[in-house]
Image (cartoon, rainbow, N blue to C red; front, side):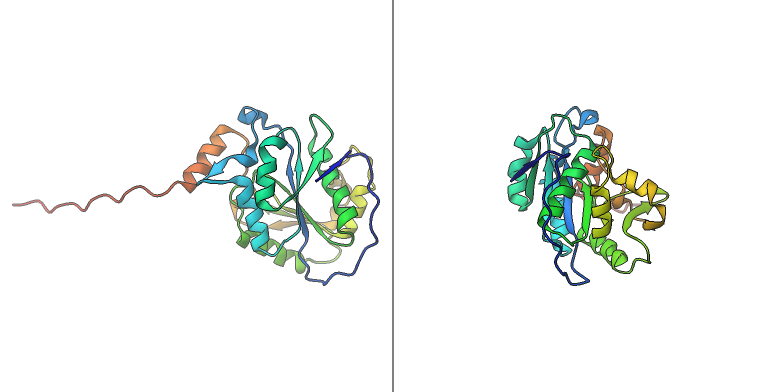
Length: 236
């Protein structure tokens, strides 16, 4: 377990050589406050008897991504047992109400100190429909990305989604920004390095922000109802 201040730079390890097809590491951002959900730990919500977080980490592991870290904030007590079950390495915020750039920076600092030279995927923790198949498609696109792309963001009908994939070069450049700047700031300043990968599957953009979102997602996981009995032929 690690507790880092988002503004404090960890001492990086020297980059090491990795196979060109090595799967990126994964940083799951689970420090949100869930205000529109009535202040709850959204990754702990159950879908079909399995938490959103467990579904998400299982998708990455099944796609070959073994190194998964989990950025935790105010709901760490609810999420730590899930982190253990998911075999995700918890990263604990020192901030009471961390912003998304704060969480991104915490994940990046840990990645630099632990997996120098590796690419990194960042993903919000309330992405309930993402499966291993979606992750494999994303990784295949990343492996065949055009030059000079250093970041990929799945895009569905113009809407940006998750996970965001960052090359080691992008990770290093984002880390060098001012502490208040996040991934979005780097992308805005480096449009030529960003590939908005077009895809049609809503799993990349479906998250849980409101009770209505949760109801729709749970309906998708609900078992089908009993089949209607066959109609009896009417006599005469």
